Amino acid sequence: MNFVMTATKRAPFAQPSRLLFALYTLAIAHIVEAGLYALGFSFGEIIGVGGFAQENVDTFMEVFYFSVVNYSSLGLGDIYPTGHLRFLAGVEALNGFLLISCSASTIFLVVTRGKE
Image (cartoon, rainbow, N blue to C red; front, side, top):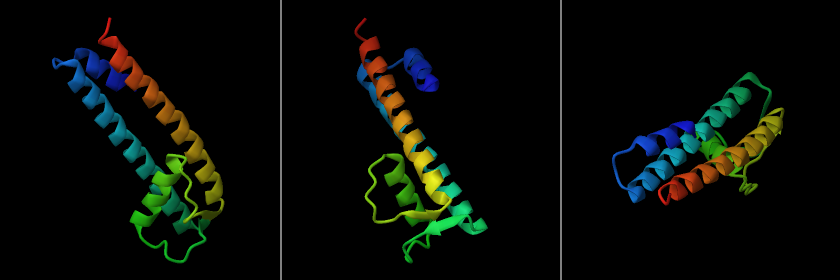
């Protein structure tokens, strides 16, 4: 978040472009964060601390899909973890909610800073 605030403050382009820069940078950061959790879910499944109740969750893309749904607190329920991975899912949902809230605050600051 600090990187986005600093970069948009120093950016030589107009306010709408600063907003787009902030939006895309934060979106990419959230996708990377969900990807790291997906790696954690995959690793947990490999070492045997949990898995997924559905039989068809066998590719990384399906685990990444679950991670993005969980990170955004959307919680569709079509894929859900078992064992100790349930704890990781709870931590991810809480962390995702907090970081998305921080991103909303950052976007607000980027938008209102140009009106000073």
